[in-house]
Length: 292
Image (tube, rainbow, N blue to C red; front, side, top):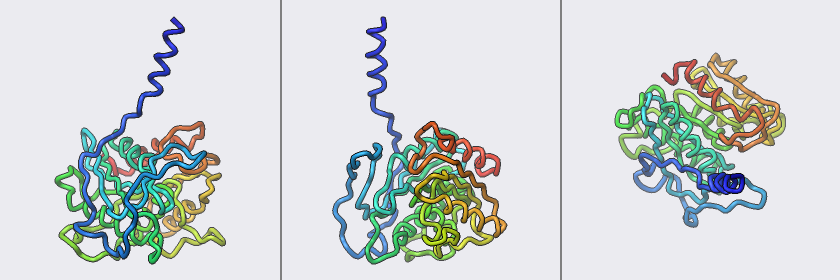
């Protein structure tokens, strides 16, 4: 019996993990993305370097896309997801499709943004991605009725560089960074809430106490929840300082800093308590009536 039992278990562990499929995929822009001045090599998955975890890393994105993952029973809330990757690649499954599947599990429609990477040589690191994030928010609001979404419950979630992108989208919504190209451009690109998981680049490099200029928090910044680990190589000061700025501005927000956990864990479980963050976020969304 024991000899038969082991191969069965082994075969189960080697089975491919179920991959969630998008309900709808579409280009973000009707033509060429704004501000593109040169051609990149073809979009491709980047191989992992020795010692790196198994993650789908997408590079050379010049045609940004939007993928909609719709739950079986939508509750009206939607979240636009910005994967991380240092603004050089996108951690597509770890911080994108796996997150969409989690959100779908409690009725939230997930919209994963394949924003432009790597950094454009002639622009700020976040300039092209911010155009794409603002466009994704406006498109989601434009299609809200058709996608079973409440246009007043559309949030944004980002990891690492995607957390920086989330912060810029939360604070720069008054100024559209791209030209009007169609009707969707007339819809608001202000997210109704934010979820920032180990966000990067939010503080100055010297003191780590000042927010960067592209994140001008004020009283109209939407509420947010922050998740970080104290031993993260990407300093937790990014989360702490933005949370403090929001508190001073009178904006409801929530902060969780764990002593251990590192960086780049996504939703994948570990022995560190930080990996339980999805339950904290789900509870926050329900407690603040952002999910009903």
